[in-house]
Image (cartoon, rainbow, N blue to C red; front, side, top):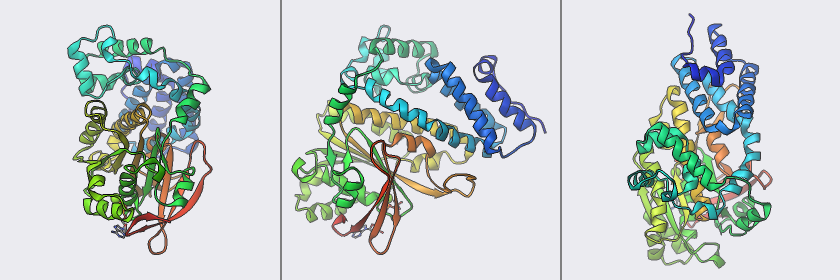
Length: 423
Ligand SMILES: Nc1ncnc2c1ncn2[C@@H]1O[C@H](COP(=O)(O)OP(=O)(O)OP(=O)(O)O)[C@@H](O)[C@H]1O
Ligand SMILES: [Mg+2]
C-alpha cells in the first residue's frame, strides 16, 4: 500500500528533504523506523534549523504539521519515536541556547506594555491580554498560530504584531553580569528535608525555575506540593519567602485538613497558612492553561505576593484529553506553550514553580527508559530541576535529581510522614 504525505508547495520547499525521506520510508512499508533512519531525519531537521534559524517558529509549526500528516498516515509508532528523539537530539543545542533565552528575558524588557506596538488598538490589546499576553516578551516569543487561535487575529496581523514586538524588544544578548544580577535575586523555599534541600543545591526549591517531581502514584508528589505551599508562607529566616502560594489542583487531592496538619507541625498559625494559599481546581487542560494565564492579574491587580505556583499534576488533564497517538503533536505543542508561560512568569515575577508529573510504563519505547515521564522531552526540557521519586521502605522515598543545569545528578532519601516532608 502506497501512501503519500500531502504537503502544500510551500511546505515542500521548507522541509522538502526531510519529508521526502520519511515518505519514501513509509512507501517502503516500514512501520518502525530504525534508529539510524530517525537520526538521519533529525540531522535534516537540524540542518534546516541552521539554514532557517530566524524562521524557527515557522519551522517548528511545520514540523508539527509534518508530524500530524504522518499521524494521518497511521505510522504512529514512527512518529512517537521521531517526536521523542527530535527533542532528545536537539536537547544539547537547546540547552546551549537556554542561557541566551534567559539573557533576553531580563526583567526590564518584560515590563513594556503591549499598547506600544504600532497597529495594536484597544480592542486587539484587550484580546491579547485576555489570552494572557501581557507584555512584549510574551508576544515576541509567541508562535503565530497561537495568536490566530487564541485571539482570533488574522494570520498576517498576528505575524506583524510578533515582528513589531520583536523589533521593539531589541532581542539580543545581555551580559553575563546582567545574568548574575538576576541570579542574585533568586529566592529559596525549603522542603523541610535537609537531604532534599541539599539535592536541590542547598536551600530547596528556587525561584525563576521550574521544579518537577515525577513519579508513580503514592510517591509523595502531592505531599511535597502541600508542604511547599505551607513553607512559602514562612519568613525568609525559616526557609520561606513571606509569600503566597497558588495551587492548581486538577487531581482533586488538595486537602485543607492536611495543610492544617503540616502548618501545626511547623508551629505556624494554620488559619494564616490557609489564607495564604490560593487554590483553584482545573477541569480541563484549557482551563488549567487559563488559570495560569490569570496569575499575573493576581500579582498586578490584586497585589498578591505570589512566590510559588504549584500544578498538581501538570500533565494529567493533557494526557486524558489527548488520548491516542494521533493527538500527540497537538498535545505537545500545547504543553510547550503552557510551560513557556510558566517559565516566563517565574522569570518576570521571581517566583518558584513546582509541578508534578506521572510516570507511565512505556512498553512501546524501543530505546531509552521504558518508564517515561509524561510529556516526554518537552517537559524534561522545560523543567530546570527534574526529580524522579521512587518508593522505599515504609514512609521513605528516594528522590533522584537528573539533568540540572548547575548541579550534579544525585539521590536523596526523605520521608513522607504525619508532619509532612522530613528527613
Ligand atoms: N496525614 C498523613 N500522614 C502520614 N502520611 C501521609 C499523610 N498523608 C499522606 N501520607 C503519605 O503520602 C502518601 C501519598 O502521597 P502523595 O499523595 O503525595 O502521592 P502522589 O505521588 O501525589 O501520588 P498520585 O500520583 O496518586 O497523585 C500516602 O501513601 C502516605 O504514605
Ligand atoms: Mg498526587
